[in-house]
Amino acid sequence: MKTRKLTQSILAVLAIATLTLPGTVMAQDGPAKGTTTIPTYVGDLNYQHQTLSKPSAEKLHRQMALARASELVLWSMPAMGFYQAFKAQQENLNVGPDDLAIGLYEGPDAVRTWLTANVTTPYTVTMFDLSGTGPLVFEIPEGGVYGVCDNAWQEPIK
Image (cartoon, rainbow, N blue to C red; front, top):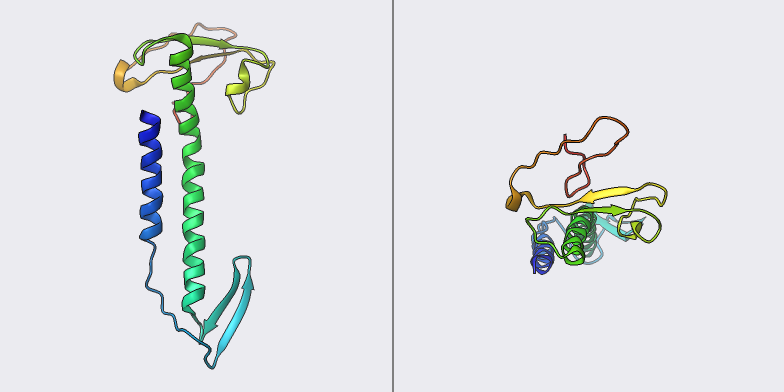
């Protein structure tokens, strides 16, 4: 259910970003004296007296909307992957959102879930929602234990 709401929120942001792009560009229609065409990766852009033509301005606005939508999808990928792994952990281990479950991931079959995992390193993973559990304290013994605590964007928590 939360995945559906998050997906709907992302789509709503995309729609708003597309509809609210700046639409007031000094533009002129039709050929005129002083018209210049410049080839770009977006296509040919037409200028009239150093001002973008209306079709060229619309082409650039479309490209800006596409770039913004792509950036939004890329920005949300780590959080969406983390959330899906959290939900899979709950379903596979039959635990609730406030339960602390620790999974050991080792070998090629176990690390498929993780984008950057390798098959030679054993991974001990736990995920939880602090809004349900409240603050947590981990005591890690000294010695040969190495690891990191990440947030949903896979940034280390300091």
